[in-house]
Length: 139
Image 1: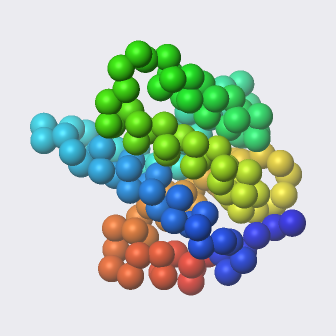
Image 2 (image 1 turned 180 degrees about the horizontal axis):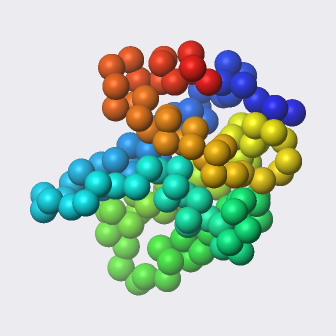
Image 3 (image 1 turned 180 degrees about the vertical axis):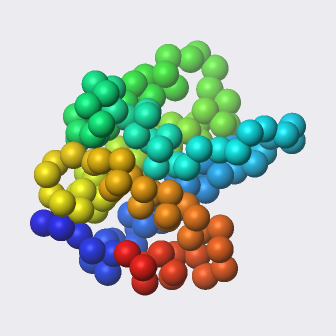
């Protein structure tokens, strides 16, 4: 079933907002001048497409989330920031199947670079006045 923004549960949009906000917060927290960030959709494609076939499968998403979860579970000392990431990863594991289905606009079971561009559009919509309202109107 293809989900449209109108059918997408609000709590999932909130979790996505959390991911994008976290990405934006950590990117802007650095005070030293840095080169511009790559669009979030491109970053996700590079991170998730482990077999370099130019598409992201559900299995690749699950594998990467599992790896991130293990990274934060291995440390003996867990500070507040690590706990925050653990909660974020757990939330992403819950929402990732629905988000994957939402982004998979052609229903082929993979996310292409083109489909992941919507993550970048979403991130950009949060930076503008009106936030998600404009994103949902254009999608």
